[in-house]
Amino acid sequence: MLYSIQDATIAATYAMLSATALDLGTCWVGAFDDDKVREVVGASKDLVPVAVITIGYSAERPEITGRRKIEEMASIEVLEKPFPHKEVKKELKR
Ligand SMILES: Cc1cc2nc3c(=O)[nH]c(=O)nc-3n(C[C@H](O)[C@H](O)[C@H](O)COP(=O)(O)O)c2cc1C
Image (cartoon, rainbow, N blue to C red; front, side, top):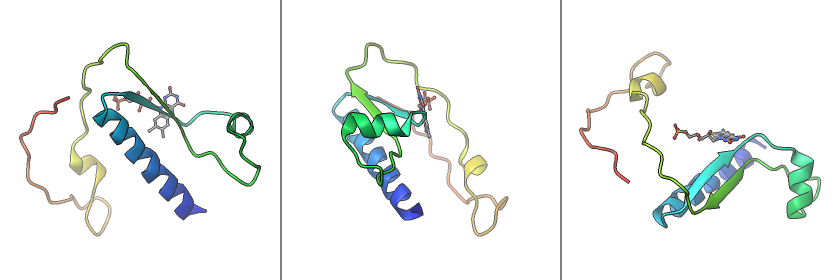
């Protein structure tokens, strides 16, 4: 089960990146009624919905929000051992 969830989230993320490349907006929705989603898409009970991705033309273009530092999210070998990285001075662009 864990691998299938990982596969599904990778696929969903690539779908979002592809949509963004096409100038579309997306939103990952994780809070939904499993049975309702199955009913809407016609899925059987043995399929587990992992995420709903909304895709459409954005009515607005929100500001790019700040990002946490890599040290706060990644470690090497053991937790709390900072991930070695080089600072990349690159502006986030749309
Ligand atoms: C695991 C996960 C579950 C989410 N579930 C919902 C959701 O149920 N409803 C919703 O409106 N947005 C949901 N979102 C979308 C987040 O709110 C969205 O990523 C966020 O607004 C983006 O903010 P940022 O650009 O500052 O990172 C979810 C995002 C993630 C990663």
